[in-house]
Image (cartoon, rainbow, N blue to C red; front, side, top):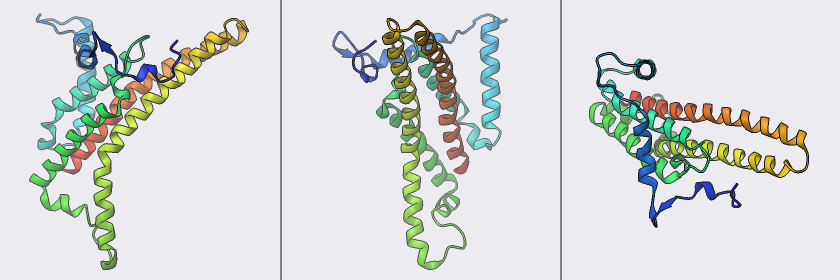
Length: 226
């Protein structure tokens, strides 16, 4: 185990150069593609899962919003695989970096807002001032709604960063406790090891859920602007 609790979150280097880009691009190699007319079971399962998620996510969208389907599916697959690969020993999770999550959230959020201002200008501006607002409260509500609008990408990035980072820190602590108890008590070591295995399973679920939540919120922002 690493002595420093936050060492797993530092950007790795290869020959003195940041190795973030190869790590980010690596998940794309894990998805097999078939050039044959009849696909194997793995590809069929992969296609069925993608179709299921796509159908569930695109149901609420109109034709304009459904043009984002490829981007949203690429986003959820990328985040999910990156989160899962980060659970491997001696690996690095790019989604624990707030800068990377902001780099994903801000362009997607800005794209939804620009789409709304371009195609539904009146409805998009109406969100800043709810109907029936008393006249004295109009300036305050406009400021509040503007702040809430600009907080959306920050909330997206911080939510993903906090959940992934917290899980990794907890696994690190329990793993360190398991090694420390190895020479003290076999029973305590067994209990902490079982707890670590259960936590690992929970983190696998959290990795998938956070990818779905991030993409779903982007989808909802898009739905509000199309």
